[in-house]
Image 1 (cartoon, helix red, strand yellow):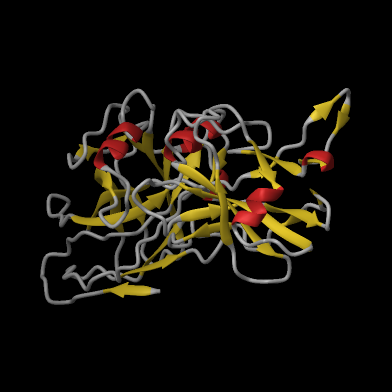
Image 2: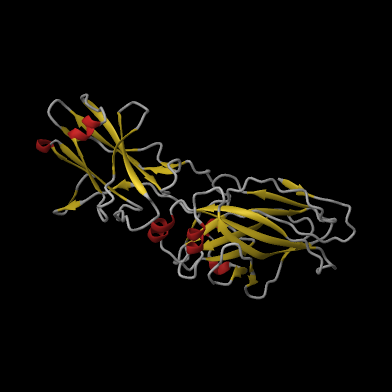
Length: 363
């Protein structure tokens, strides 16, 4: 809980700033809490006349709302007034990618909900304010317009836990959003104004930057139907001393397409089962544009020193950025290969307990 209070100004007017977490809404009206507010700056002490407000953000797993308490001796009015978008300065995300995401072609809109109950699943149709749909140029401020005539949020004296929510709604389905923008990080700066009764012309704007990220789904096993039977996502050809690892991204029904820029490259990593250290086995062939099968030969194991008999673990590691190897996502499962004195064959598939983001700030 953060309290903002300063008694020195005679005129009871000011600006209150609250941090919001971004929620993605799909075109169907459902939403996904895929982007999170990563802002870690403390709310500064602002001279706010007699306005005394408290801000509490939701905890892990529920931090899609901002809860506002009014400890002033009177009611206040809040309203979002302007937004500005940019690529996150500390991210490999480029200005061109940010401009593309917020372009008219991608159909991205920004909407605000007043007193949203269950912000993660709230429908954009409940929004009270929005930035009119248009291409949002990087670094340019855009006015937030009321929907249905509501111009401000009344916050009565003694109000506790008033919920506020902001929804970023791209006009893309999941597959297209991840295929184009996986891991991209944006900064949405929102200007919020608070006014006190009787002096509505007196406001003090304050810009609060929100850091948001598109999710990075892991590669998943791809089960292939052959003659009506579903095969395991690994095929053995013992006489040829090879196995084929079958996988998909961004979902189990898709095959990775290297013409999309969301993931720059994939590495296939290997380790001896029961040991902690992964090493590069081979790269996914970028020429296999619509292919998500990777053939692993016995000689591939020999080339990286995996010459002993026994079981080996294999996973897929995806890197969203060409210029950065510290941000990556590991596959949801681990494939296993059993090596004996004569050949290599597929072993059992098992979940990867370390699947997920690495190198990204966690929500």
